[in-house]
Image (cartoon, rainbow, N blue to C red; front, side, top):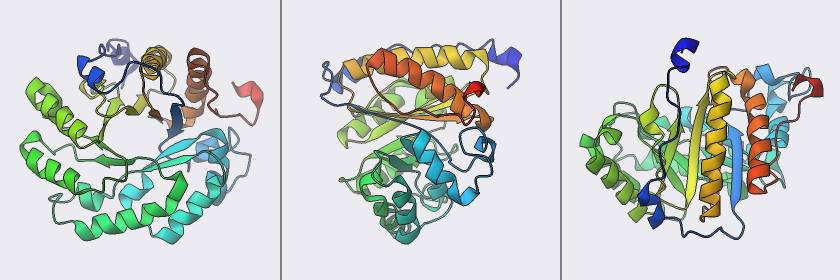
Length: 295
């Protein structure tokens, strides 16, 4: 998006919904967990920046887990991985406090009806269970064309998912947010089945930054603009909101940094972690640059 357009967007986050008072108890949780990561570890732009020079792609994850404590794992959206391959990824995290948050396979969510996909769902779940202690919430994204006219199909599918795993839903069609009654019905349903709702903060779709919590956990997808000045003011706004949520009983927080040019995700992450650790009394890991003078 051109810089002139970015300068004209109101990036201010919406006010705190009254709905969230049904979810947050109003007192800080005993030991809230905050997870921060990116969408991919395979970024060649990070070699010589946060990965040592000449690092081979097969070793990227070994280094990624030193700089972040989670990842929004998009790889599982594009193919079904078996337990053996996923166990190898989990082993890279070792004894670290690290979470993989796998995105559900597109063969389930983006091809035809959500229903009657038992085999594909089972194979997806069989694979990701190999993450074991490193398995975070499963991220279920339906396509841009999936409208509220298919809500009964969506609700039936979500009811069919195992209740012993955490799930977060992301809807993208504008009609889910355009009418209050549709939006509220979705949030009420998710709350009733103990599922989370993804909050997406991106320049082109301010309606997706809805600020609603349907469980005492948050899953935030933040899309920055290659260190444009608004990236920093937007992060500042998020620091205030996350502190409010944590002070009022949020148990788990997942924040994933996306960037149109992923080369700059580490820089914005460092800025955010320093501010968040100070504001909330946390000690979240942050990227360490190969050459400290770079940032």
